[in-house]
Image (cartoon, rainbow, N blue to C red; front, side, top):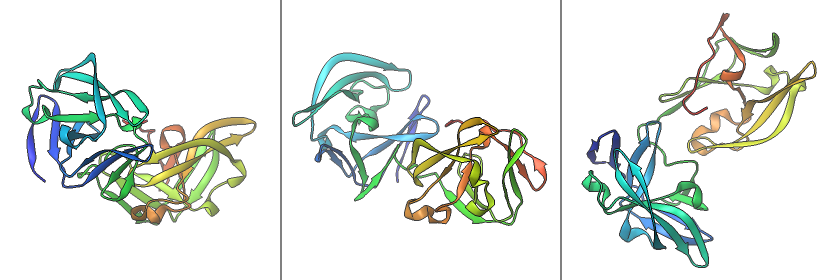
Length: 251
């Protein structure tokens, strides 16, 4: 990968992956020269060469201002009989020259993004993000309202670059009688789709405090079927020491 010096607070880097955006079964963009732009510090988004956008771009006349990228011209994206209103941005007069011929299509407006031939969810995979899942014998105990809801000496600890460790516990070490199904589903580009649980303790329901990956992506198979508690909403004891509740940039 080649590196471009950031303009202001924005970080920019080319990617060697082929990237496609699909809308209604139609390929709206297909590029072998995508550019990763860190509009936010925690993850990148794709900017694509204008010539690789196969959909019609209709200038709305609206402008969104960015201190680092300049004036962003807002486009509707027309794919067949579908119009994705305001779903694209271009910066033809950006102070960063490498952005001027690129277009950013809103991630959520597209039905499916592909990196090479594999679907990717939430946002592009960060080339500087690493996920390690390690078997451990550390003692992890989870409390909610003073009640122990999980107690394990066989966690799998998931270490993800720039985020706090997460403790994935066997169901046999969890008070499953307290778990209540939740309709919440979350998505991760590295792990896949997670199903969530709430907890009911003495009639009080604590919403969305644990999750599991029933069918994780291949690189995260080590956490399949394990339960992870949301440290920000429960009390975690690690090797007998109570941990401070963390604050997460993605929470």
